[in-house]
Amino acid sequence: MQVDQTLDCKGLSCPMPIIKLSKTLKKQMKSGEVLEMIGTDPGSKTDVPAWCEKTGNTLLESKEEDGAFIFYIKKK
Image 1: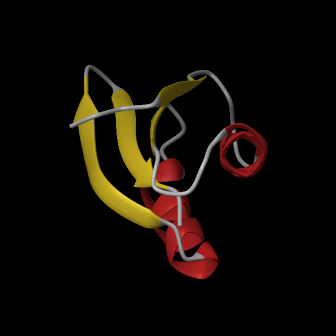
Image 2: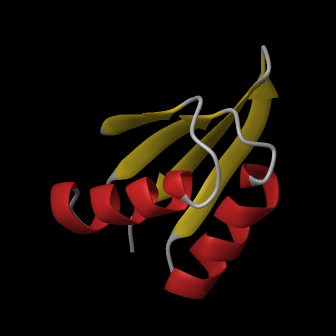
Image 3: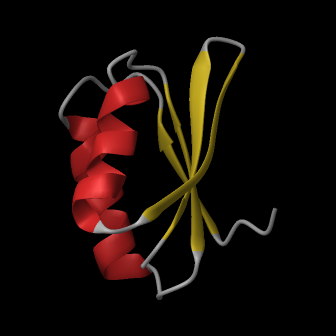
């Protein structure tokens, strides 16, 4: 998968990962680009998919590796 940017949210608790995700997509990325977001907050497992659905961005994949949650989000 082609990743255009990575956002490290490890160690951040809700709502900071979603706030950083929103700002990064809005201010630093173009439509169609893919953001890899890495976080450790367990709430991200439900928060990120819900945020994507609400905002119209596409969650391409999510996985868990070594205690971190990794999301691949395509900007609308």
